[in-house]
Length: 93
Image (cartoon, rainbow, N blue to C red; front, top):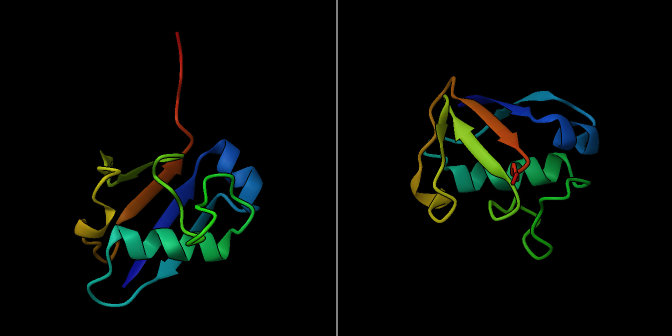
C-alpha cells in the first residue's frame, strides 16, 4: 500500500524533502510508518535514539486531517491513499 507523508517546515528542512510516498506492506500501522520515516530521514530531530523511529512525544502526526493518539501508534491501521502530516509540536503562551 502507498501512503503520502508531508512534513512540516522544520522537519522538511531536516529531512531534505517536504513530501514523499512510502510503500508499506498490507496491514501496516502508524508504528510501521514511523520507522520507515526514520529510515528515510535519519537527520530528523524527532527520532527515538534507540529504535530510529519517529517519536510521537517529539512530533505531532495526523492522518487525513485527524490527529493520531501518540500513545497507541501500533493500533492505528493505515490504508492506501492515506495522507499523513508530520509536524513539530506547537507551543505558545
